[in-house]
Image 1: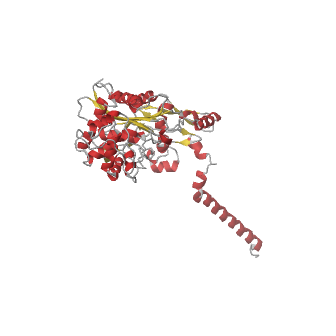
Image 2: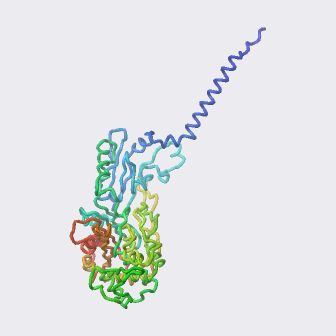
Length: 495
């Protein structure tokens, strides 16, 4: 019986070659699908993720319980695009979500919730992993008070400026406005019109996409005197707001021959008390007191309110407000009246007013109230958090009285609200080469119904960065805006 024919050498070689090819193909597939998968997923040329992202409606951002964002079917390659019910009114809060240009502000920070990719939205994590099915986008509830926001926008009008209002006891942000604004819906899609709208906004010299409430710092001018007064009182440099301070007039800044000048002749006398100096906004007195308090203690007080903190997330990260930690005494004198290199966002200056109103306790600013699934079930509920204890309640009470006197008898009378106690501080900050720029008009304040012993329900910071007015002052331009916002929050109480 003949045996089976053997496999030839050539056949064995061919089989071995095929086996090697199979192994190489398997290795290549493994390399691509396992080790290089993330690189391909993240490659800008890979449109799969973008197509998936816009294959379903995006979750909603809400103000006062009402949606200010939505989604619309496009009929194009991307099924849905973002829409905004009143884009310019809330752009400083929502930011934008664009198919081409990405996300910003809350649209960016809370993108996982809104897009449905956050793992906290999974009902059953294993099933979600196996099916790879995206969850519906969740919702973001903001802390914004619609009436306060509208009052801020109406007050700012066509001026360049910003308003931030905070609830002092919780840190909840009640208004966040920046003007001029923009419509984030104008470039939410991927059409030529969207690209043209983006290009036009980028080229606009008025910078409507600059969030002046959070991302721009300004010299705070005399509003910073609230910080200086608090530091002087907290460190015993002043023990009685109605007693003479010992401040000379003229006050020649240390190491120079330059006197610190005042804006009103009523300040031009020696030994004024702190209450009078704050009411009249006397540079010579507050500059002197800042130097007497000393650099380290001035820095500590400023940092208690949020200065020099690069990570003051709320949850959006604002620009860092600055109070120099290394200065000579003449520079400290200028910094103590909100000039030299001192610079602040309206957010931080609202924290100054809120910290005073909250008996010295500064709360973390909070823009988001809660995150929910699309069915309304809560994913995360935000709680108030203490930022720092800037001063004792006793010192805060003294500063509250100083601010109340500014509004009752001094430079802040335009913020008076009948039937309410209002405390405030004006500021007119010089800037530019040789102070040739149009001054910034500031006002910071708080208000509560008369007779109330509770923490005031609102604190406000307003800055007008560029006005066509011939007489630029915080009391004339910014105080009426703050008044309108405070009235909106008070809801007619005592008016």
